[in-house]
Image 1 (cartoon, rainbow, N blue to C red):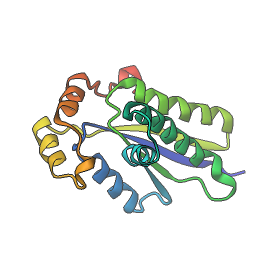
Image 2 (image 1 turned 90 degrees about the horizontal axis):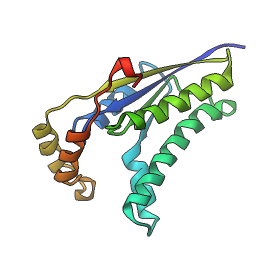
Image 3 (image 1 turned 45 degrees about the vertical axis):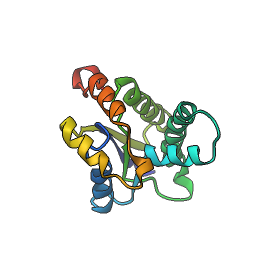
Image 4 (image 1 turned 90 degrees about the vertical axis):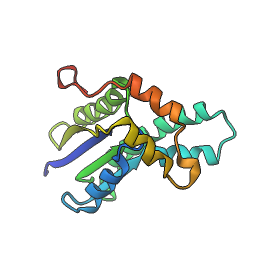
Length: 167
């Protein structure tokens, strides 16, 4: 049996930092076909459109749904080849958010034994707060804009990736 290599990249940064643009470029470049872009915002939007629950609860469920989407990419090897690149696009401003993805990848490595190799990487899109706020104000549709106070709170609580701490 041949070994399949998949690279899982987490894009970390504030809203408006340029993560989605980078993710789209990485997936469109065809450097590592096939590639998959898991955009947490789109998962959240789809749940909120079909959900009358409180937004925070829908947001929490969207995080679980996005992780489920990642797990599905690993499980669907029978019907199609596993992607060479999976880009996860979220702010991942807390280390615990990144660890959840890492744990899922590690679990898959344990299940696959020697049949696959999963490479895990984090790209920190470190963009100045004022640039993020300006870019956010240009988002369309308007519903995709993140409130400025939320961006500022994320900037104050953001835990940049630290290789000595694992994520």
